[in-house]
Image (cartoon, rainbow, N blue to C red; front, side, top):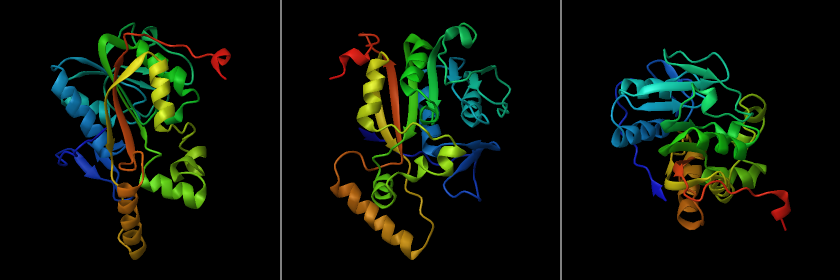
Length: 256
């Protein structure tokens, strides 16, 4: 496990004054930790030449797609609404149903990006299988989801019985419906015919200045030092590749 070092905030990024800790890129809202997007773009630049095909799954307004486009990649997107404001090929997909190359221009991709989307779908296992089908044989899938082992999430578990991001309006309005802990997610990754090449914890605990926030920050630091598991970072980020073993169906008849 690595803690991905954040890159300096560069031109094109502006802070969202109404939501501390959130950002825009070229006027497009980033619906994830800034470090998650920066890692993804940096990883793409480090491993592929300009003009390489990249697919951004569930693009939102298109902030990641625009960053990849500005980095010189040939970007396509999927969307289940009409919010994308980037002039690239857009494939309309309902991610609650199986999909494959036929749904994205009958093509596969060297790089597929699934940033902060798997927690929004009804069937994460089926979603991972569909994403695996979009990869070139030596392609990579960058996947991120909230880290429910983080110190902040664990304190919320203790006080509320659930992480804040998986409660209330976060369920009803933002559709955070599939909470994935590390072991469960990595089991689904394996079953989908994928293996983990890299994993990182990114994102910081954003606390507005106050006495309570200072106390909470000290509690988080203590938890990160003392607790087992992966309490650092608000986001869990993986780089995945196709597994030589292929998919491993795990049916109900195999359950004890």
